[in-house]
Length: 592
Image 1 (cartoon, rainbow, N blue to C red):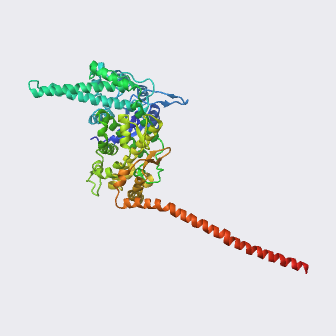
Image 2: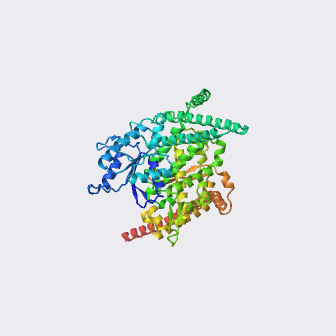
Image 3: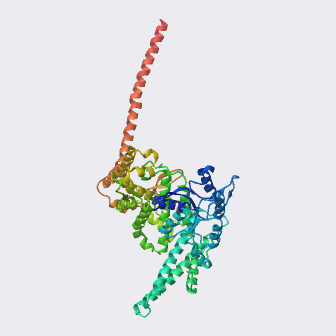
């Protein structure tokens, strides 16, 4: 590994992609992202603020990683305008001619790449490139050596390229995110097609078993081709980039086309679930940009994180949830299979989040022996059983949300079905998704607090400034311990008895708790020990409290009656007699 530290500036219109890149690159000690930008204006402002005139030959940034699809920027006049990635290439090379630029993009148009080359880019890689190859491209370009490994691929595939023109107007983050997942799905199908085709070519037609294998493989190829065509029809029509058939998209038989058209006609009046999902994700991304302060009046594990780390963690989880839903949709999971798979789905989301957030190869000197290092992710992943029991299994309404997004089923709210796309359904879906990503985030940080709470490197990298002291860390952990006990023995039984769930939601501003109704009779029957005793006390309280209240009210009214009508009147009569006596005595004295 190179001993030199390369400082990177990441310019990409996809905020979630930037979060993922930052989390992934943490594991490489010679690479550091020192800045991010959503558009050209932010990128130029960053460079101008960190590079003075006297230091142009030795800038604080060693490499710019740039995507051609950028967001809009605000002009001085207050009106938004759009400066493309190609324009930014020209501007960067004009102001910083010695600063290398690596083009990292999902666009596969050779004309655009050739234009970028003429504008001075020093390297090119496609998003989705093998991680080892991508790291090599970053290091090679940062060191001043051009890297054009993927250019030849584009030249070969130029007649069959997938995406042609860059949009003329800015693309929203969610649109880019949708487009990236669309491309990911197509690439997944293309890879499977290549693999099946290779197996088919290698089969020996002279043997009966191989002939049967050939028939099966040929059927798989037809199914994959049909799946790819369907994705193009149902998804790509909503994309802002124009999608054309690639080399792996042959003509589909008319039978498949006709059956697909019939399906599309049946669904033409139904809400587009992909648009609903995109709207849901768009809303969540917007809420993640606001304050994430804890306003729930109960300690959360993520409270120990810096604001930027907390936001980064929630972004990573949101992306993992999106990927899981996409994989479930492509795997054609059946509604009857979903509920049984939910524990594994949540487990996989948690595991992938731990790996992406901390970095697969992130190590710490855990003991006094500095030569002994431990892999942070390996240690954290060992706590999966605890996290599954204490966090993942307790996340409510996940089957309701996934069924809604995968099978377009109606959401169940207060024992009533709510139509897809209705305001009530969107609001409830937001609440469930917010609670999901927050609780998984808590489950990611809890093992860190158990194993590495007082490691100085962890404190400096992740903790809030006011929680760096060992005493404050221990106080924070003690507060969490009391919360766990209170929830286990008091709060959870009470919620089960009252048929309620508490959800953590991203409000404006901060994280708040709300209560929703949900039948929990099965959980109530499984309570035992202290938890069952708590429900009995609550039931006894409900039975006695009204009678006791009535008795106290009766005694109180009687006491008031005695004070006012008996004692009060008696005192009044005595007082009146005294006054009358004094008056008579005063009159007698005047007569004398």
